[in-house]
Image (cartoon, rainbow, N blue to C red):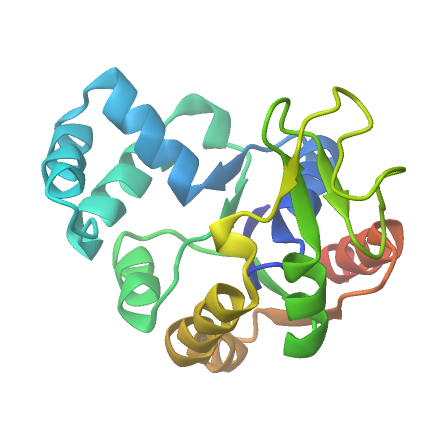
Length: 210
């Protein structure tokens, strides 16, 4: 089974990818992770990506696609894979098709923007041990203090409401058009994200098996 997971930042794609990966015994391929792996192993594409990153530039599509191509050629992808974070744009989806990669299903996890902003902007992380809390869903016993190590809880820059709203704007502009692209191919399944992760997982697995 070759899958693509779509969904706005904060929609919970990563958690669903882990569950599907375990259930179907296929690798979950996150763009960020494989770029880091390519940098570490010093592949040709990894070196090209590093040259852009060292200059503070975005890694261009052709390099990202080259890294994806190398990763999909590995043995553990023979029985399928889950792509999380790729493609992000129509040109990337077209490049994937041009590579001859036949995707079986595209799962789009939908969560309203206002819920995502609440979900992400409420997160707090311990400066010392990295433990994660939430102002609504997982409150620390003492406000602003980590219950594990006593460290100070902070809001990461990525979780600031303005940053989250900007990331959502970019998602709607660049990535959301992929829904129509894959709907035309008859591959799109929409899953409504639920409050409980387990409920979203049930719906996601049902969409894959449908």
